[in-house]
Image 1 (spheres, rainbow, N blue to C red):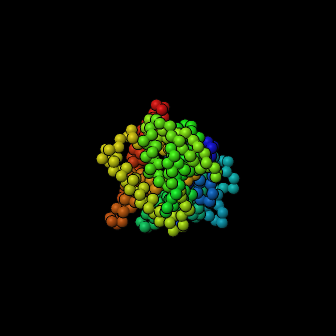
Image 2 (image 1 turned 120 degrees about the horizontal axis):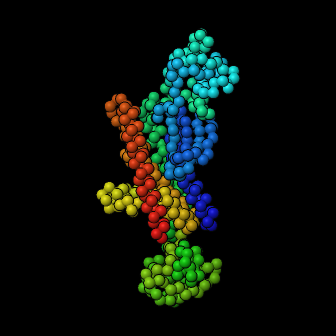
Image 3 (image 1 turned 45 degrees about the vertical axis):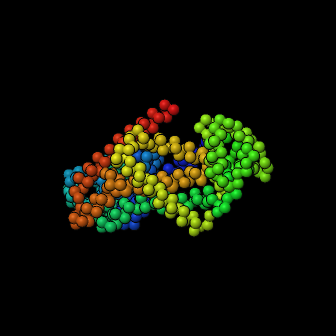
Length: 419
């Protein structure tokens, strides 16, 4: 891949992993009737924002995740109190807009002092308009306008906490599930693109030549197949081929490779470590759909074990902070893999998607796993945990995750500088 293609492919990969995860939350929240206020990719200041229907879609500065903001999860930022002067706009005898500022600039509105207001259950507002008290019904999708921003009201039946535990749990669990589904699909696609070893291989293929390596300097190219080494026919025996290279550290070797129907003689000198900088393998064939599905499942199981083994090493102190990577380190690895070709990037994206799904299900405050744990406790107790306490737990957890992100990012940058 060329540099621009590598960068674009990397950006698209991260966008796909995060957006599909958040889409899972979004879709099942909407199905449950929950008002979704924002669908965001990234954190921090907004770079792009557009509103479609009830939801605002945003791309934010820090590409370290995303979120779906549902009504009722956090305290509403706009509030109206009795005694406050507001202006309201009516349509079909219902309030569709409530203006909280710049009242003199509003046209075709009623202006008055709020005597009482209920925007969650009874959906009404009582206004004192020139000494006359008027009771007005409020539309369930009415907007409150303040400081140039419009905020849709959230009747109680549109709020996250009003829905049954099962529907709320599904809206939370759907995010990681989307990552698992994506991982399975990407593993299958990678297998289709890469192929699988033939049952009785007769060739050793060079699938990748490392830049600035002995193999690259000798003129080897991706796709070459090894006919002979020092006069010895190789056939499809990868192990004996690798052993020949390892036994010839620092010694010139005479290779004959097949390339485009021609025989190309080359002199290759392994480094002192007995390596030449290639990724050899047996010839491959295209797998059937059934084989791809089966092998994708095997890849899911293998990498799940690898991921949990990594978590175990962190818990028992076998891996320290200096060994962990953050967004910078992950991006560097992704760029390196993208340069190897689309099949490698696809397989890496599958691994990252699987990791993202598993990580989000850990019972760590602020992650989906912690929110599911609170919902489980609510189901057992028969009543919800105090929302303020739960919010505090998630806030502290989020702050700790951001602190960890800063530390590992610092380590990533320090490692790049030292190199």
